[in-house]
Image (cartoon, rainbow, N blue to C red; front, side, top):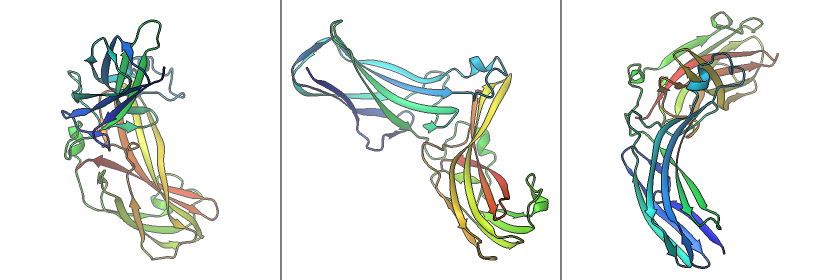
Length: 302
């Protein structure tokens, strides 16, 4: 006997907001009729936290603080014990997207040490002589525009342009051995709408040695822990080359970067974890010297 099980969501983009209904059909295809002991559908939302290997064992409290955080766990019976006919059977479903008490929903996010995911799981129970059937279907949770569960983030709102000048003397680190140079720039804002591009411009005014590359690096800063201590890790999301080779002097170089969905989310501060973001401007010189300037950015959904 051949049986296939699938969960089909009504929305092609699979994006839902809190308090909406996640709806679709459970599709069961079989080449002959079969008996089952019940069909259930479970909605789950989980934050998985992980401490990097270099931090494991530093603080005993980490072992409790990095346990998965369950945001949603709802199970409903779709169909009681019955017999399904051969062919394709479609069973419609509708489940409200609501968090557990004392929990809030966060946007779907795939990181290195923090992972926020949501999904549906359909289980078909069969007799002990037959194998149970199971199918999982992921969906995405997204904030409504203007919402953020970390209200302190909104207090830092400032959409004014950020002007900067880089010289060896102004570098916090890495100035030793750097050639004489002057790099001017402007970022449209560091309070960024996640649905809009990150923009600005750079101008290399002077440089004592040729430039090999100018790059724009997006970094996630993930923090896991509790009141007793935190483990903070920064990892690269993407690196975009905006200048190749010895770029001409005094010519504006545009900065334009799209925030990738799933690998970014609105900046999030909670008691057990944080998800923050930074942008690095990296200049690599022909003599192999590299300088970096860091700009913390706040992502919101507007």
